[in-house]
Length: 360
Image (cartoon, rainbow, N blue to C red; front, side):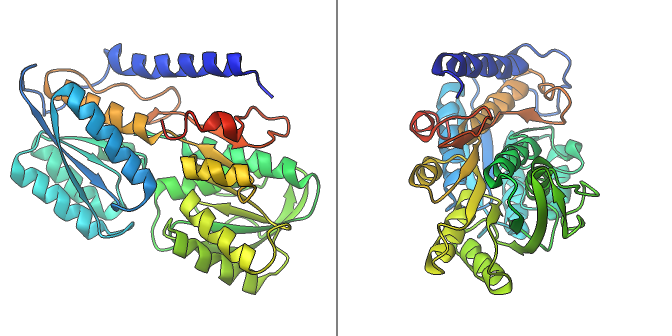
């Protein structure tokens, strides 16, 4: 296990690098939203996917806290549920009508891209959070987890956990009717971390259903959508167990889906036979790792995403520049940490230590 002193130093270095990418960048473009003075209030609409998921609640809290520091007024809107593109389109239209200066958005799908373009044409600064668009320049910039790397973390851990055992895998994704970069990249990152050839990394589900992973042989038993929700996770897991009772490894798009999957597994009396891995790092998710219901999770930092998003819009509207993306990426990476009771030789954070940083 990596020492606490080293981890604290690494965290400070990472935070400094992120701040530096915002404050020191001079190569980014200036967007049309510039024009307000330092003493003028900046009006921003935060558009979430829904108002229930704890991840989105944390984003809102981060945005509101940063707004107080930067003299920004936040209006919060959301779709009726994750995937409600029409609800987000209406929220974008509302922001344009109000004459807002900027929008922070977690896009529910490509169906909102035309509305985002309309907002930018109207002079609003549009910053994506958590969910990169494809192409990246649909928005001015995105602050997000490197979701492929986050998936890769838990895939590598899962392969070590199996220790050569035949892997019977359930993939519990977000959607099966649209391509969301978060959904795609986490899934493909997980499989890559397992050592499984993903064929086309731009597609879900085209990898071979049987073959070799880094520790042995595998089969993909099922691939089900959950909409990233607890009830969706439970239903998906029930369907998977009905199709194949030998499943011993479950990947989930996020921790609400993982919690639903865990409930289905427990009801089937298989908790001691199946390992679940996920991505989020919510405090509740850290508790799931501590309890053993969740084997490992990749912690992300939604509060940091929201803070940097608000800070950026306020800066650009007052004459600043859009920050450059992280090296090798098309967005600003806000970081991840592997959380597990045992890192199995990988760099990790134990649950007791993660409780002090969960969703910071």
